[in-house]
Length: 159
Figure 1 (cartoon, rainbow, N blue to C red):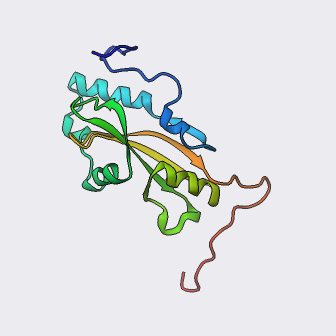
Figure 2 (cartoon, rainbow, N blue to C red):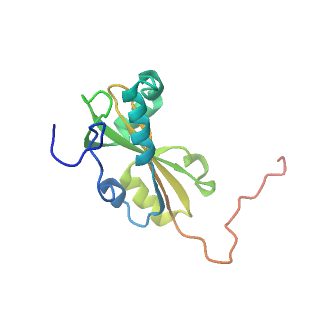
């Protein structure tokens, strides 16, 4: 077992802000889902939740982890054979067809400089057993000016 603090289930505790979020400047409204993750893992270990309920990554998510994700040094908390990958998904009204796509951290930095406000959801994925869990979410892009309504898309005449 590697050094460092661990919880009652033997899971390595994350201390401080995760390094992968720090790689993207300008993030705000950060929500960390690590407490929920620990609760889910405790339920799995206690037998209250089956592996099929938590190791259910879709083929699309697994491919996104392979091509767009960033591999971490953290082992999968379920199978402990593979290292976790982090995949960032972007959502926002101003993103158009890009909304819902997986993006690398380099792409997020470029989008942050060029787009209006949008949300990023980071999912941790084990490509081996299929474990996946929402890791964090945050907001990037240009902040709307106070008192100014956000730009809205015009509706087509057929809408």
